[in-house]
Image: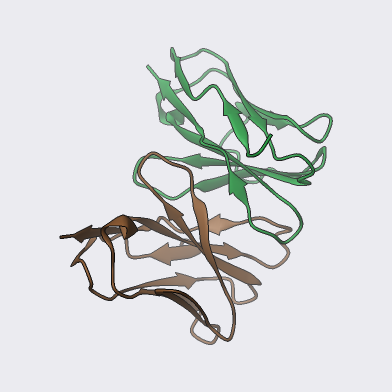
Length: 112
Length: 111
C-alpha cells in the first residue's frame, strides 16, 4: 500500500482481555517500530524490528506486551490481560535505512 | 532525566509572529536529529531533518548545537495552519534506527 496501515483504528477492551494490534508497513521497509503515545505525551518507544528480527524490546512496559513480525512484513503487537494504564494510542512506523520514518494513523486502545 | 526534553508550552502567538522552540538531549554521541509535526489526533510527520550546519526550509529554520546538546526550531511569519505539536526527535548512537521522541511543544497561532 501507499502508507503504513494499522488496524483496528479503535479498540475498546474490558480489563483483563487480550488484544492484538496489527501493522502493515510500507512495502520494502526493513525497519519497523512500535510506539505508545499517552494523551499529551510524545510517542514512547516500545520495540524495533529489522526484517523479522526483534532487535530491541527494551521499551515494552511488562511481560504482558509481546510483538512479532514473523515474515518480515506485517507485525502484531499483543497485549495480554489489559489494564487501564494500557489505554493509549499505539503507533507503528516503518523506515528504510536512515531515511524518514512514516507512521500509521495508530490504534486508539481504551481499557474499561 | 529524560533522553529528550522539550518545553511543553503551549506557545500562543499571533499570525505573523516569529516563534522558537528548543530541545535538549542527553546522549552526547547522538547521531541524527529531526523535527516532527503532529496535528491533533493524527500521526507524527517529518517536518525537517536537522543538520550540523543548520538548515532552512521556507519559513522554518533548524539548528543543532552539539556542544550544548540542544536543537532549535524557528518558525517565521506564523500561519494559522502552523498550529500543532512539534516533536523533537533524536537517533541515539548504537540505536540502530531507533528514534527517541520528546514530549512535544504545542503551538497555537491565533488571528
